[in-house]
Image (tube, rainbow, N blue to C red; front, top):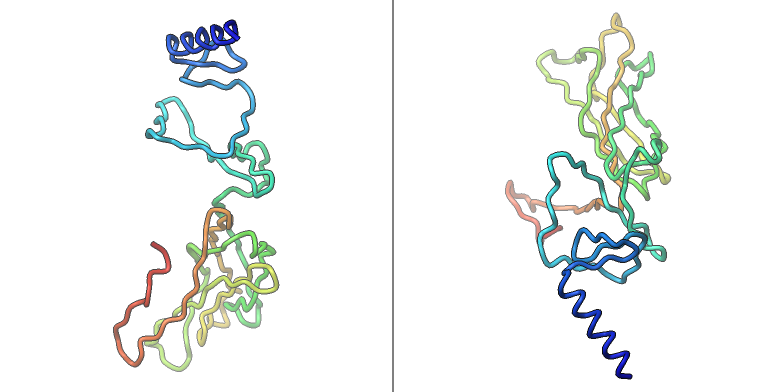
Length: 206
Protein backbone atom coordinates (compact mmCIF):
# COMPACT_ATOMS: atom_id res chain seq x y z
CA UNK A 1 0.00 0.00 0.00
CA UNK A 2 2.88 2.36 0.84
CA UNK A 3 4.45 1.76 -2.57
CA UNK A 4 1.19 2.54 -4.36
CA UNK A 5 0.71 5.79 -2.45
CA UNK A 6 4.31 6.81 -3.15
CA UNK A 7 3.78 6.18 -6.86
CA UNK A 8 0.62 8.31 -6.96
CA UNK A 9 2.38 11.16 -5.17
CA UNK A 10 5.32 10.90 -7.57
CA UNK A 11 3.08 11.01 -10.65
CA UNK A 12 1.11 13.93 -9.22
CA UNK A 13 4.32 15.85 -8.56
CA UNK A 14 5.50 15.19 -12.12
CA UNK A 15 2.25 16.45 -13.58
CA UNK A 16 2.33 19.63 -11.53
CA UNK A 17 5.91 20.32 -12.47
CA UNK A 18 5.45 19.92 -16.22
CA UNK A 19 1.91 21.36 -16.37
CA UNK A 20 1.46 19.38 -19.58
CA UNK A 21 0.33 15.78 -19.97
CA UNK A 22 0.60 13.70 -23.12
CA UNK A 23 -1.22 10.48 -23.99
CA UNK A 24 0.54 8.44 -26.67
CA UNK A 25 3.04 11.28 -27.07
CA UNK A 26 6.08 12.37 -25.09
CA UNK A 27 5.85 15.95 -26.43
CA UNK A 28 2.51 17.41 -25.30
CA UNK A 29 1.72 20.80 -26.83
CA UNK A 30 -1.03 21.78 -24.37
CA UNK A 31 -2.03 20.98 -20.79
CA UNK A 32 -3.47 17.73 -22.23
CA UNK A 33 -2.45 16.40 -25.63
CA UNK A 34 -4.02 13.18 -26.93
CA UNK A 35 -2.40 11.49 -29.91
CA UNK A 36 -5.29 9.26 -30.96
CA UNK A 37 -9.04 9.05 -30.52
CA UNK A 38 -10.88 10.13 -27.39
CA UNK A 39 -14.34 9.27 -26.07
CA UNK A 40 -16.15 11.57 -23.65
CA UNK A 41 -19.71 12.21 -22.55
CA UNK A 42 -19.30 15.98 -22.82
CA UNK A 43 -16.86 18.82 -23.37
CA UNK A 44 -16.83 22.09 -21.40
CA UNK A 45 -14.83 25.13 -22.54
CA UNK A 46 -14.16 27.52 -19.66
CA UNK A 47 -11.86 29.83 -21.59
CA UNK A 48 -12.27 31.40 -25.05
CA UNK A 49 -11.18 29.09 -27.83
CA UNK A 50 -7.77 29.74 -29.31
CA UNK A 51 -7.82 31.99 -32.38
CA UNK A 52 -6.44 30.84 -35.70
CA UNK A 53 -3.02 32.00 -36.72
CA UNK A 54 -2.46 33.85 -39.99
CA UNK A 55 -1.17 30.71 -41.72
CA UNK A 56 -3.95 28.43 -40.41
CA UNK A 57 -7.22 27.53 -42.10
CA UNK A 58 -10.58 26.62 -40.56
CA UNK A 59 -13.06 23.79 -40.80
CA UNK A 60 -16.44 22.79 -39.35
CA UNK A 61 -16.70 20.44 -36.41
CA UNK A 62 -19.78 18.26 -36.89
CA UNK A 63 -21.50 15.55 -34.85
CA UNK A 64 -23.29 12.59 -36.35
CA UNK A 65 -26.78 11.68 -35.01
CA UNK A 66 -27.28 9.30 -32.10
CA UNK A 67 -26.38 6.63 -31.25
CA UNK A 68 -22.92 7.22 -32.81
CA UNK A 69 -22.59 10.87 -31.66
CA UNK A 70 -19.26 10.98 -33.42
CA UNK A 71 -17.50 14.35 -33.60
CA UNK A 72 -15.31 14.91 -36.63
CA UNK A 73 -13.94 17.68 -38.81
CA UNK A 74 -15.84 18.49 -41.99
CA UNK A 75 -13.82 18.93 -45.16
CA UNK A 76 -15.52 18.77 -48.56
CA UNK A 77 -12.29 17.61 -50.19
CA UNK A 78 -12.73 14.25 -48.42
CA UNK A 79 -15.97 13.55 -50.30
CA UNK A 80 -16.30 16.18 -53.06
CA UNK A 81 -19.91 15.34 -53.96
CA UNK A 82 -21.20 15.26 -50.39
CA UNK A 83 -23.40 18.13 -49.14
CA UNK A 84 -21.91 20.84 -46.98
CA UNK A 85 -23.74 22.46 -44.04
CA UNK A 86 -24.54 25.34 -46.43
CA UNK A 87 -24.72 24.75 -50.19
CA UNK A 88 -25.22 27.06 -53.17
CA UNK A 89 -27.06 25.43 -56.08
CA UNK A 90 -27.96 27.15 -59.34
CA UNK A 91 -30.67 25.97 -61.75
CA UNK A 92 -31.13 27.38 -65.26
CA UNK A 93 -34.65 26.42 -66.36
CA UNK A 94 -35.92 26.91 -69.92
CA UNK A 95 -39.66 27.58 -69.99
CA UNK A 96 -42.40 26.02 -72.12
CA UNK A 97 -42.31 27.73 -75.57
CA UNK A 98 -46.10 28.19 -75.42
CA UNK A 99 -45.80 30.15 -72.16
CA UNK A 100 -42.39 31.76 -72.29
CA UNK A 101 -42.03 32.67 -68.60
CA UNK A 102 -43.95 30.06 -66.57
CA UNK A 103 -42.39 27.37 -64.40
CA UNK A 104 -45.39 25.91 -62.62
CA UNK A 105 -43.45 23.16 -60.86
CA UNK A 106 -39.84 22.10 -61.05
CA UNK A 107 -38.80 19.18 -58.86
CA UNK A 108 -35.26 19.72 -57.56
CA UNK A 109 -35.20 16.17 -56.11
CA UNK A 110 -33.69 17.70 -52.95
CA UNK A 111 -34.89 15.83 -49.86
CA UNK A 112 -37.11 18.26 -47.92
CA UNK A 113 -36.83 16.28 -44.67
CA UNK A 114 -33.04 16.62 -44.70
CA UNK A 115 -32.51 20.05 -46.27
CA UNK A 116 -33.99 23.55 -46.06
CA UNK A 117 -34.12 25.48 -49.37
CA UNK A 118 -34.22 29.26 -49.79
CA UNK A 119 -34.20 31.09 -53.14
CA UNK A 120 -31.49 33.70 -52.65
CA UNK A 121 -31.64 35.42 -56.05
CA UNK A 122 -33.05 34.98 -59.53
CA UNK A 123 -32.80 36.22 -63.09
CA UNK A 124 -34.90 36.02 -66.27
CA UNK A 125 -33.64 36.44 -69.80
CA UNK A 126 -36.58 38.23 -71.45
CA UNK A 127 -38.55 41.45 -70.81
CA UNK A 128 -42.21 40.92 -69.99
CA UNK A 129 -45.34 42.97 -70.59
CA UNK A 130 -49.11 42.87 -70.20
CA UNK A 131 -51.57 43.63 -72.96
CA UNK A 132 -54.15 45.21 -70.63
CA UNK A 133 -52.17 48.12 -69.18
CA UNK A 134 -48.69 49.11 -70.22
CA UNK A 135 -48.09 51.05 -67.02
CA UNK A 136 -48.41 47.96 -64.78
CA UNK A 137 -45.04 46.81 -63.41
CA UNK A 138 -44.49 43.04 -63.66
CA UNK A 139 -43.84 41.32 -60.34
CA UNK A 140 -42.54 37.75 -60.35
CA UNK A 141 -43.93 34.96 -58.22
CA UNK A 142 -40.91 32.94 -57.17
CA UNK A 143 -40.78 30.52 -54.28
CA UNK A 144 -39.64 27.09 -53.15
CA UNK A 145 -42.06 24.72 -51.45
CA UNK A 146 -41.97 21.21 -50.07
CA UNK A 147 -44.25 18.63 -51.66
CA UNK A 148 -44.05 14.86 -51.79
CA UNK A 149 -40.82 14.77 -49.82
CA UNK A 150 -38.79 17.01 -52.15
CA UNK A 151 -38.36 20.72 -52.81
CA UNK A 152 -40.26 22.16 -55.78
CA UNK A 153 -39.71 25.55 -57.47
CA UNK A 154 -42.25 27.94 -58.98
CA UNK A 155 -41.40 30.97 -61.12
CA UNK A 156 -43.80 33.13 -63.13
CA UNK A 157 -44.70 36.68 -64.09
CA UNK A 158 -48.40 36.12 -63.45
CA UNK A 159 -50.52 38.04 -65.94
CA UNK A 160 -47.46 38.96 -67.98
CA UNK A 161 -45.50 37.29 -70.74
CA UNK A 162 -42.63 38.00 -73.13
CA UNK A 163 -43.66 39.21 -76.57
CA UNK A 164 -44.34 36.41 -79.05
CA UNK A 165 -41.41 37.57 -81.14
CA UNK A 166 -38.97 36.93 -78.29
CA UNK A 167 -37.22 33.58 -77.69
CA UNK A 168 -38.38 31.31 -74.91
CA UNK A 169 -37.34 32.68 -71.53
CA UNK A 170 -34.81 31.08 -69.19
CA UNK A 171 -34.95 31.45 -65.40
CA UNK A 172 -31.79 31.40 -63.31
CA UNK A 173 -32.63 30.43 -59.74
CA UNK A 174 -29.90 30.49 -57.08
CA UNK A 175 -30.70 28.36 -54.05
CA UNK A 176 -29.23 28.33 -50.57
CA UNK A 177 -29.59 24.78 -49.30
CA UNK A 178 -29.06 24.28 -45.56
CA UNK A 179 -28.60 20.97 -43.79
CA UNK A 180 -31.47 20.77 -41.30
CA UNK A 181 -28.98 19.63 -38.65
CA UNK A 182 -27.75 23.24 -38.60
CA UNK A 183 -30.88 25.21 -39.57
CA UNK A 184 -34.54 25.40 -38.56
CA UNK A 185 -37.57 26.83 -40.29
CA UNK A 186 -40.52 28.33 -38.44
CA UNK A 187 -44.02 28.78 -39.85
CA UNK A 188 -46.49 31.16 -38.29
CA UNK A 189 -49.81 32.51 -39.57
CA UNK A 190 -50.53 36.04 -38.36
CA UNK A 191 -53.53 38.36 -38.69
CA UNK A 192 -53.61 42.17 -38.49
CA UNK A 193 -57.28 41.97 -37.37
CA UNK A 194 -58.52 44.66 -39.76
CA UNK A 195 -55.66 46.98 -38.82
CA UNK A 196 -52.55 48.15 -40.66
CA UNK A 197 -50.23 47.39 -37.75
CA UNK A 198 -49.64 44.35 -35.62
CA UNK A 199 -47.17 42.23 -33.69
CA UNK A 200 -46.43 38.58 -33.10
CA UNK A 201 -47.95 37.14 -29.94
CA UNK A 202 -44.53 35.80 -28.95
CA UNK A 203 -41.08 35.65 -30.53
CA UNK A 204 -40.57 32.55 -32.63
CA UNK A 205 -36.90 32.50 -31.64
CA UNK A 206 -35.05 34.21 -28.80
